[in-house]
Amino acid sequence: MEYLALYRKYRPIRFSDISGQDNIVKIIHNSIVNNKISHAYLLCGPRGTGKTTMAKLIARMVNCENLIDGEPCGKCNSCLSINNNSNDDIIEMDAASNNGVDEIREIRDKVNLVPSISKYKVYIIDEVHMLSTGAFNALLKTLEEPPKHVIFILATTEEQKIPLTIASRCQKYNFTKLTVDNIVKRLKEIVMAEKLTVNDEVLTEIARFSDGGMRDAINMLDQLVSSVSGEITINNVYEINGILSFTDICDFLIMLSDGNLSNILNFVDKMESGGKDLVKLLEEMLLIIKDVLIFKNCPDLIVDNLKKPNIQKLGDLYNEEFIYYFVNSVDELIGKIKFSSHPTVLVQVFFVNLVNYYKNLNDRLGNKIISGKYFPEIIEEKNQTIEEKNYFPGNNDEKKSKTVENNKLSDDVKKIRINNALAMADKKFLLNLKKIWNSVGEYLLDKNFGVIAGLLNDTIPVVASEEVLILVSENNSVISRLNEFNADVSLFLKKFFNLEYKVAVINNVEWDNEKKKFVENKKNNIKYRVISEDSCDKNKVSLSDESKKSVNDDVNNLINIIGDDIIEYM
Image (spheres, rainbow, N blue to C red):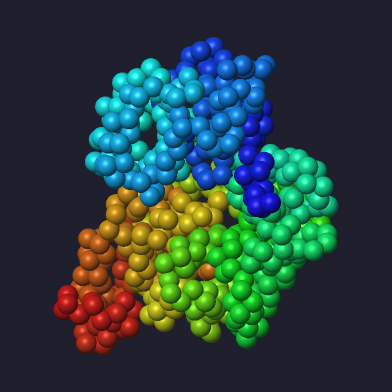
């Protein structure tokens, strides 16, 4: 006897057998029982969620001669012929391979013919979004006013490609991905019927890998049954999916933190040579890293005690900044791999970059010295952090951080800071700061400082000293908000870069004026002196006479402070 695939053998023949689409089943079933049958149905949703099964059940039920408790009897001529695939009144068409105008015209020409043995002639068009524009136009009039004995059932996985003129003439139902519990329940029924020995852990992994598709899950079970002699284990599931076990992936993620590139690249090579799916590996890593993030924020949500030790260990190794970077980078990499002829190279380069990013991140958060004396070592321990703010800058939350007072920068203090920055400026500080300034954008997803990072990402440092920093931006709105939340800016620089800075933010025009003023003062042998912010007295924001210097020496000093671009003002 010819072998019948399990998904075909156990395709539901009753509405009550359909899993996970309870609302749709209820609505369609009741409408047919109450003789409120639509002339056209549009079934939308991901693959393997029951669209074609529903279409067949509608065709079966509307033509059954003797419904029993609202379900097809399975014994009348119509039911028997449908079961045997010999009912000429049920016409199934795959629009993927029959998408031209001629095929639809043939339907239009035959639609007026009365059914041969059934009450209704039912046209089931699968993957209907594949029809050409001409075919849709040919279908339009027939779909709008079909004969009373005709029902159209259209199924698609890409609803957005269906013309509105077609969709508006149908009753539309959106099928959703099935839950793991729904799939496991159905798999258990099949396992019992087939008298198989498969434990719940295996069925759960099958359901998880199927991504909400019942057909994929049943096919996976079918493949396992066909290829494995004896009891099916969890490792068999990993093998047929070309993926590693949860523990193996966790071990690899731990290996990343060690930074041994040789071991990491060898691992990727073995993955490829062993026939493993690199995309699935990355997708599984994403799920695990997601669990790590959840564990760090809500430990009680990770209820699987077998997985918790590995998740906790990864949580100790990776902070949230690295997790955000990892998720975004992996998601981007998966998109590239699908269109690349060298996926292994992309993956290897990605992991090299990831290891380097992790090292650099640890250097910053580990309070290590950067560029010698110009970035003093911070005495605090690696895991010691400043008290964080409990509100997002600029939102409607009225709470204020206990550590931040007088957040907004006054005009007087801004003038003092500009003066002090120019008085103490050192070009080496500025150059070193510019090297790490691009890293500001890496904190856009930080839950406490993301807004500040976004604003700072639109600025350029122009003067830096040990204590004071001048930033320039073209966007006046950015300048206003940064000066409004000035203390938060200092907190951000302290937390992520270990820099104790008082900051002033100005626009390009102000900066040009300050440079011109600086040159003019130098020509007049006037030197800037440091002024205390405590006074905040405008009269004290002034310049005083110092030792005489030549103009050329002064200009050279200026170049050393803010760069060669100042020469244009001479």
